[in-house]
Length: 231
View 1: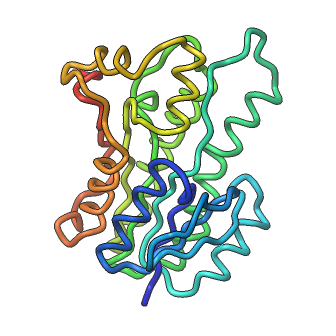
View 2 (view 1 turned 120 degrees about the horizontal axis):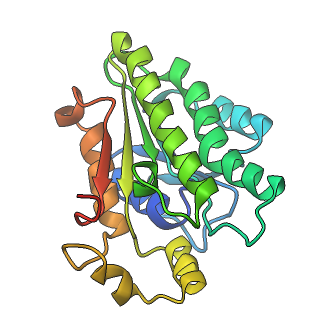
């Protein structure tokens, strides 16, 4: 059985995607630097991978075997330091943009024509920006540009490429950001028209839809899941 690789697949949105896809019968590879906190559900195998390391990415895809799709959820976030420096900028880009490109490029030749899927986890900050997250906003805008170009390049093979752009999602990464902002989850929810935060499982459901036959002619799209915050 062909595999679905989920980067960042042992935490947060990546883990939610891995769980749902495994429940739907896919053979899932949860690729991440951090090992899972406990046993993974049936159908999910963890393989170590640092998407910022070219050798690590090559080793991952060499080990996976036949490939059906990739969900590229590995990422890092955080507000800009008071005095941003090149090391901070490079660190954000290495995982969020360079890592996404590296995995997509490694996956594309292995994906089957007319069935292959590439799904990027971008962000609403790839559609708009905030002043205290310059590096992260730039990286996620880059992911959306990468997605659109790859969608056109791979369209003749019938491979779809899309990006999911969540707003606040209640994950470990978001909770760390709320702590930086001295914000509660309730305050984050109040900033959306729907007055609720998107769940990791809802993001996973959209990824699963794009992998399904119903998603076979959806490509080149940046899909916001933000409770209407960007309207």
